[in-house]
Figure 1 (cartoon, rainbow, N blue to C red):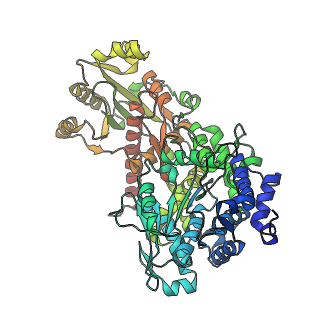
Figure 2: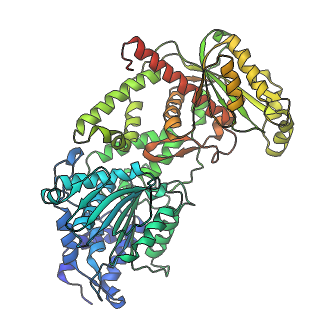
Length: 616
């Protein structure tokens, strides 16, 4: 069978042949996707499918009338890159011979950040909403949270507003776009939305599927597609750190479909994966295009990647983020956070007597009642701290980003800014800081005496050694469970030596102790250990370790906790210590981060007051 000239002369076919001939760098999965398309062009008619370049071009011509609305491309018409042309050519070109409806009803596309995933999904969604000829089309952007789902939805709204013929016929509200003439609607949908009942979707884009802990949303949508003749589930994601989650399971299924040596077929699922091949050097710039085929079409991407690569070489946690987000390589979340050489360089031995009467901020982590409980005192520097300087630099960077994107409304800017958190963190690390004294750390650990010998014997933990060394501040409490009276007495004793300003606490297991402390006029501040609370001080702590501005006196219990810490990475570059994923106890590090948070926030508030900037 000879292929027609309208196929072989198409830009999609050129991309296919360039990949297979090695003219475009591509991993084996991308090559398999191209080979699948080539094989189908020769043989899919035997299974009841026809390929229509005309239909593919109708889609491409339509989306070329949509405009970018932010960044360096703002105001310019969308021009798909070669990899996008190939993918759209496949997606919209294949039809069922029996009725002319689309062959593919599901997409799985995995590609690195800064590829333009959100705008691409918005372009496909806008087409499905207004140009696909579907009456009463229900279209959704889907994510783990409604706020995340709004990101692509905002892209759709911007495309419609910048396309006059669409803007004239569409009605746009915050979480709803509608076209009355076709009874169609477009809405964001998250797990925290009010309802998932009664859905009849024609299109759904699932954003960052790797962040979904279960396939609940996916299954709800998939089961609701039955009433449509040619619906489309559009999953577009980066890699993640949960190989047991639904996204990785879908990925494994897709690789089996693509693998020419495995007999797994699904003619309704179009999949492509952009990543590095096994054992390739992640710091070799020549292979980065495999993970992001748009890298050479977005001018700022390569320089950002170089900066991130440099950062990733320095820190284990950033290396994991670099691999997953920017090279699209799946990793296990059980990866160390702190570089222990840098941690030990912060030993900063000091005489605790020198801190008598000094101001400090304290924190309690009482998460366990039969093992390690933590009390940590943090003494801030008397000079302007790194954290204060960092906040000033951050305001400057955020202001610059805001000036570059005047099209973003004020209420939407915090969500928009989420996409820039990695870049902001990199920029902050490159600033020139005036180094003050370090933050001095005094940690206390409390373990029921009945548990010490057992833990030392069964798990090889040095509880028995630390218990006998006063320098360790390791306290054996006289019971089978954590004795909170003992901890309360230690706080009172330390307050007689130091000037405790506040005590931060995780509310779990802490109610009675905190009540007693408040009755004794201690200022206690609740800190729930979620993303918004723990991610900022975790980043501050990590930066201070890198700069050598944490002095921990080489406390062996704190050292042990530091080497155990694994961080859980969440949306928009957030991360925080994860007790479940960490190899052993990390309570002292969590308490340290909480106390550091209070020290930084009080320092910032004091500075605002003294400079006359505090607003009520």
